[in-house]
Image (tube, rainbow, N blue to C red; front, top):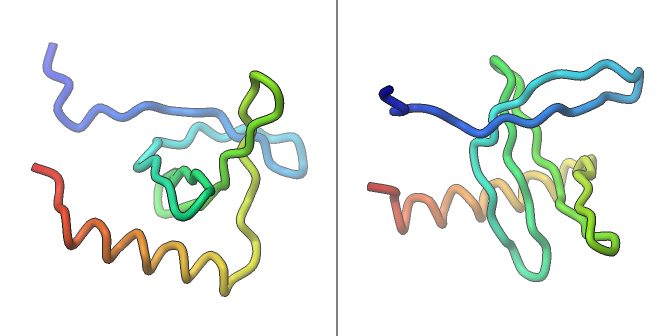
Length: 84
């Protein structure tokens, strides 16, 4: 079986309790925080990965300034070290 383009997927529940299956586009660290970039169709989410004991949770990054700063830094890092 050919897995070119295959992505990991994760279910995300919104504030209304509805679940969507997002493709995990990237996992990366910025400073002392870890982030996940998730995609569902044309929708892209930036989520902070938080640890609580032995479990991890995804938390939305809602501050537009923080989000833009993280995504800009991520884009620069990708441009400087593109994947093969």
